[in-house]
Length: 219
Image (cartoon, rainbow, N blue to C red; front, side, top):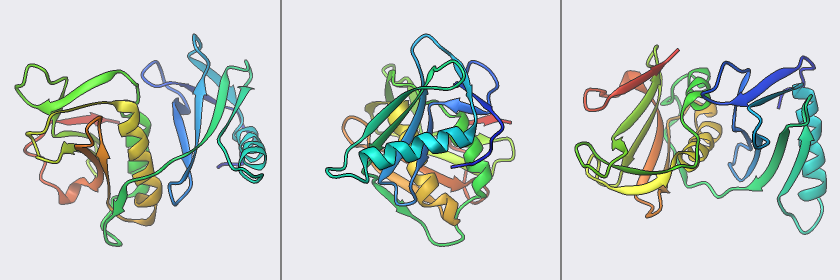
């Protein structure tokens, strides 16, 4: 986590331009420990210095992890308007990394993770043309430079149907980013969705065939 003392604004993604879109996740490189920053209900944004977030994270870890028994924790009332909360939680990643050098530039993936959907509304991930489908598979999200891309599909590519929400997909994507992409590797998280039939991959789009799926671009 950053130790910068200059305040930054964190706000709900999709509602404006912020230094950090919420929810925002920090994770360990083994993916087993995560810190989620979120806002209070009814508040879209608040401002806090990264160094203050780092202090709050250390407090959570010292109280909830360093002491036995280890457990998660929640710290509320953060930010200029006391509208931010930091939650510490364990996570069990189902991530496999590719070979060294196979991944896209990390910074391009950070932009992807910060802009992809992360709400908990139930979705139907399924084939294109199926009337039940709300998210057609395969689904890809990339930047205009088309280096890093998020690829969501099922165990039967293009034919799988499963239900789930974007928050859990986003959480798994974060795990891939911290465990694989930061080390210069492609990575995939599996067993996602209510029936564990979905997977998400962070890959270098320069090495991918994109003709079979729509590209949703962001700056």
